[in-house]
Image (cartoon, rainbow, N blue to C red; front, side, top):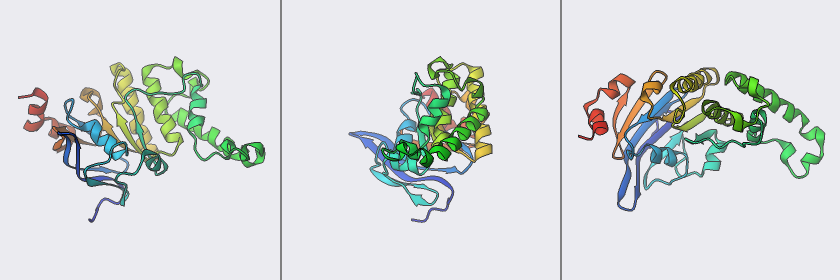
Length: 256
């Protein structure tokens, strides 16, 4: 199989069933590097299942997943994490008693100071720790959370907690973020703020996004490309207006 997209994410002919339920059927998508691509569709259309197959939580019954020209079908989440593919969830779960800064530092991987023996040798990890601290503060500035660096994460607002989760993903070297409803549960002003920050991060750091979102009134202003799903299939793709005006999409939402 020849995959033309060498930078970004591609799925080919994905199928996933749960007993007699067909959750995904012949799903082909392309998520281009550095862009924000969105999945929309009514509840039960297969959006989250698709994210979970890509993220390695489910194995497809058929088809393949490719990232930067390399097949990653069925790889476990920790292997994808090492490749820079990180999935975030609708409800973030930071370490509530740790500060915002400490949450980012905890996400930093490859620190020799975490080794059983190397932790005893300060010179082996001090430079890495200093570099990680600088990186954490840079990320906090981008997210506009730097003024809250010493606050316990449990004191953050819903929107700030969503941004903290993005910060933890960036701290571990994320290049592709698979996001499940980043605007869920927060007011419209904060929802716009979250997407605005995501867009700025994407431009500045070259982050690629595949986002599942129901808040179309918010998200469509920021995304570059849209796929619509219904009954496990892709029924439309293109820019936001094109997809939302597609009769199949209208029918899927209205249930006619």
